[in-house]
Image (cartoon, rainbow, N blue to C red; front, side, top):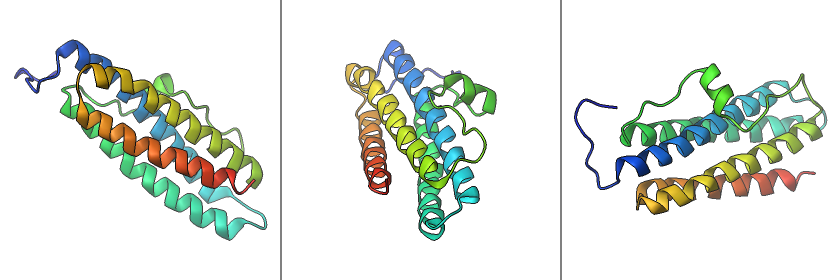
Length: 157
C-alpha cells in the first residue's frame, strides 16, 4: 500500500476484498490472452483464415483488458500481480496442452471465456458492498465481452 492513506470512500476491508477478486480476474484474463494468442499462432485446417483473424481480434481485446483490470487494482491502492508464477497461482484456467485441433481450440476458448465471466461475476458482491461503482462498471464491461465472445465461438461449433 502507498505511504499516503487512501480515502476514496471505500473502506480498506472492502478494498482488500475487491482487490482479491480483481487479482483473480487479472490472472484469468492474462491466461486467456496467452492461450488465445497461442491458438492464433498455431491454428490449422479449413477454418484457418477465419479463426486466425478472429483469435487476433480476441487476444488484442484481452490485452487491453489486462491493463484496465491492473490499473483498477492500482487505483484501489494495491500492487497488481505481474508474473507468470503469480498468475498461475491465481487463475482458474488451465494452460493449453500441446496444439489441439481447431474445433478443440474453439471449445477450449468457450470454456475460458465462461470461466473468466464466472470470475468477473464473483467480484460483484464485494464491489456492491463497498459501493465501488467503478469496479462494478468494469465488471459489467468485462461480462459483456466474455459472454458475447463465448456465444460467437460457440456458434462455430
